[in-house]
Length: 174
Image (cartoon, rainbow, N blue to C red; front, side, top):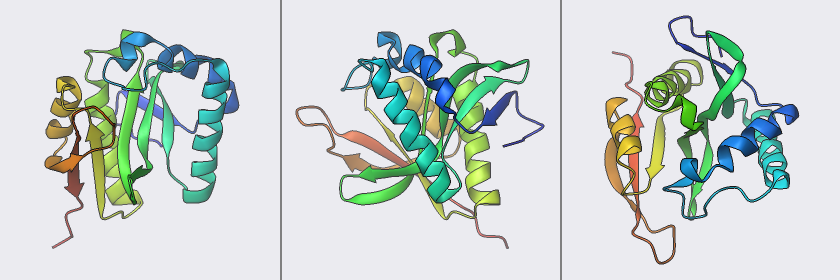
């Protein structure tokens, strides 16, 4: 996706992104709020990339590989909008994970804004959801900054407090 106003560049994920994906998703620091914990092995990274690529093929949108416009060859994280099962319901979900080196620079907020613009203006989707653990203050603030509002809870992790569900709807043209 090209967005000249963004500090970030987005491209479709490729099989050769597996090493970088594993380095980010396998890092315990990027999984502090993930009840499943860090990715355990390289095969999981390859499998996740395959699912992302298949999602792109099927839906024509999905998770991007994300880099800075200043260093487009270096992936900072992965994120975007994709279908996600909220227990029995399938919804369009905004998700992301950035390498620790990219934290604190506003990249998650930038990605969120760019992903919503893509969802609403290019794809014409009616709404996008965000699912976040209740103790993940940074991600909650990102969702609020990009205009999402808390709309419920989802008891999706046995033995844990329910996740918070955020939502934003496309504003119909006047």
